[in-house]
Length: 220
Image (cartoon, rainbow, N blue to C red; front, side):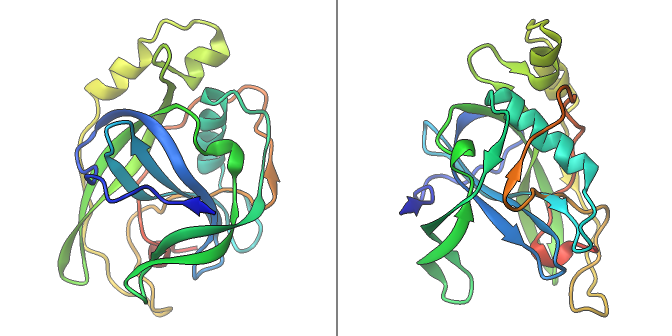
């Protein structure tokens, strides 16, 4: 059984973190958009849940921005391809109000490997209540703090990460409003992964940052 991270301190501050993804599972939004949901945990026990990359629309159209971000992650993990496998996971269930065992498609190659992640704090109002979430802005190799672009170029100077951190700012999103499908319609949505397997382009640069939203926030 794959377990989520424990009840560690929730990450709510923008910055660069080193740890591992304790869970990477396929996620399908109510709109039919497919992606990967991650749980990240640092060595100190800090935890960020609900980190998502939305990769494929219900129509089958690729979301290129997110595929570029996934490619950056795979580059930092030295992966050429990722595949899913069915496994029993322990994950939070909103309806039952606790962790439960469930079957899910997981990406073993993305899990339990050392990885550096730049997380950005996002604040917004959800149904009249303030909410805080974290968004994955950049990935880096924790061994030398080099980003995917530096790894691909061969110039592993480790300077790109500092530039990312210098420009990192918390994001305050405008309030979301329900649309006629019962979901909220926020600003630009986030992205997701493919279902069974994925192989990135030979050389793709790391993407810019994007906002993090719940399943129902995906307007496509």
